[in-house]
Length: 393
Image (cartoon, rainbow, N blue to C red; front, top):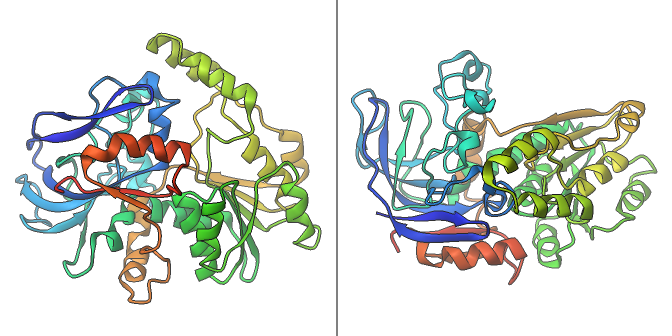
């Protein structure tokens, strides 16, 4: 089959790889009809390269048609249409029973000290082949896949794989009270959905991003927008009675703009052999923290910061005195996809499209066009906000 593979820093290509096969009784094989490029994929494209291996199949936002199931899968059959959550969870362990599927004890990557295995996301999360491919082996298919109807388009359902529940969890964790103000830093795909979810819940929502096209998309959905600048924390206080927002979602993560020292460190890591680079990241790695530090400054006293953007540094400096003095709450983590999907399915199937799932994709392509779109997405060129690939095209 054809699959998009990692070849090196800022280098991906479509290659012929072996077709996946059933390995365990609870496996399924899914023919991928749509698969998206996620902002998290850009971390593999750039910073997390030391954990990647040439030829790794990437991608973790797929959906498609079941082609084959193992003997232990009784909830699916050939021909079913399914969305595949990006984290692989068993549904029966202690963590899954607590709604913490991203910490699944059955699939935890213990040798790396990581949580549940993820599709297409480096050896940090199990080196499981990903979904930017014609076919995908799905472990724990007796629990993970989300069965959906056949009438609506893929794009109604595709984002249930990651970014829509990630945004939902991010807003839930932000703990904004009814009628309160939610600010979202970063208006990429997760940030777009987080703002729309805030509007759906009746909050005042302010989106912050330096890219005009992203601000324009958010504004279409009733979001107030601000350009990202050094003075944005003061602007946020000024328009919120001098206090700051009740809750802030950081939908940016480790590669934020405006962090030149950490940016230099990222470049230096890229010059080291992989094993040395891994050790450096695990002991002295730092993230680009300009957005997070701005959010800490901007959020009101007693407010909540919710981190949906991915962070990977083990030595990232944090202003703990300010955080303690402001009595902040901090929540974060990989999304527990299956914990939220029952709430989200009625919303994506609603004819009114209250979360705007049909107003997100800016670029579509076959697998063959993926390499150019990775570059375009990373550079935020051509108004590129969300890319969907159709492997069968």
